[in-house]
Length: 121
Image (tube, rainbow, N blue to C red):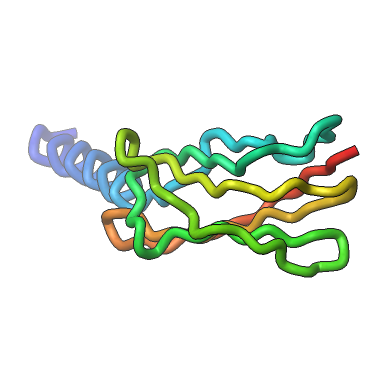
């Protein structure tokens, strides 16, 4: 293999890795309450920490009860000290299954969304 071919192969490999890293989307790294958790006490807030900085104007948290009815929440707030974290205060929740739906846009304009469940005993 010539030096020229080796340089070409290495350049393509490095470019491929850099491109895949550039297109990585933000992911939830931690969630409170945790996904699929069963809680003996109702949580006071939903707190999500992401792998990337969030755009506050495009960040939402919705909570649905077991009947798929939205629980009234105040607007989700991106933490000023840590722009990768968003939270929403909760009213006192009754026993039952809940679905957290979240959506956000990261500073690099990627829109992401997801959902998870938890249960209050």
